[in-house]
Length: 148
Image 1: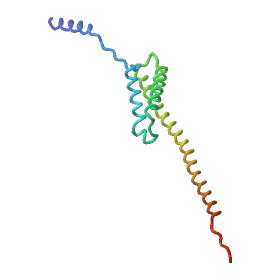
Image 2 (image 1 turned 90 degrees about the vertical axis):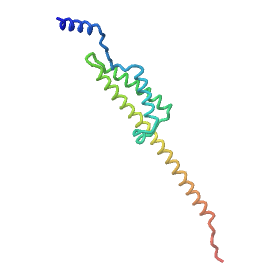
Image 3 (image 1 turned 90 degrees about the horizontal axis):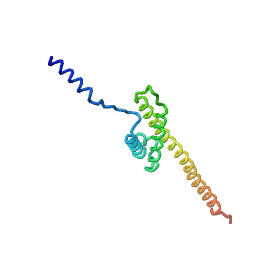
Image 4 (image 1 turned 120 degrees about the vertical axis):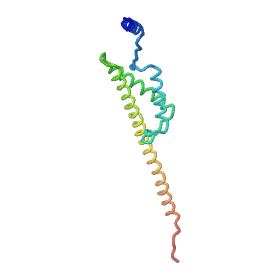
């Protein structure tokens, strides 16, 4: 009978212990802040991503990171359903952050490339105009041979 009392006692004891409930979705504000900080670091420092697309200035990276995280959070929240256990929502959140981060750096890189083409075109035109002007000036100042 002692064994029976022990198992009853154990089950009563275990029933009184609250089961911790872990929720991974939605992310807490602390988690969201960490995500933003990591995005800022990724966008503004040397990384594999920056080798392809360049880095953003810290202030631009900070505002882009906040926008990326906010939009990803909204998209994930909108995709939530009653049947989700949170993992699917977290996957949507992570995918959206990655997608939006890549879109941001690609857009910035293409706009920077477009502006540098304009700058390079201007720089290339300037010397050629100077060369043309110098050629014209040298033709005017060239010594003329006169016959005597």
